[in-house]
Image 1 (cartoon, rainbow, N blue to C red):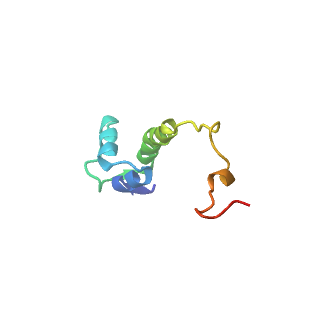
Image 2: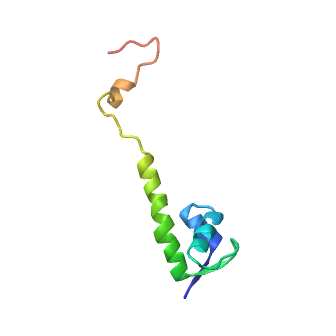
Image 3: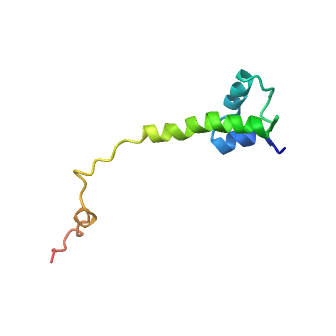
Length: 86
């Protein structure tokens, strides 16, 4: 099986190593430092559990787009001062 370092997995998931280490300790998987190697099954557990949380958070933070008051691009552009519109 392939192994991956905790810090590499953290970078992949855009998390901090200490968050992954805490998660692994809660699950009873021994990992003491960011340089610790994880078996692929432990890495998959982290990806499935913490990766989904990371992906759901940005989607929940997006504000709905209000297109009612949006102006078309040509209306937003104004002629420079001093020039008359044709």
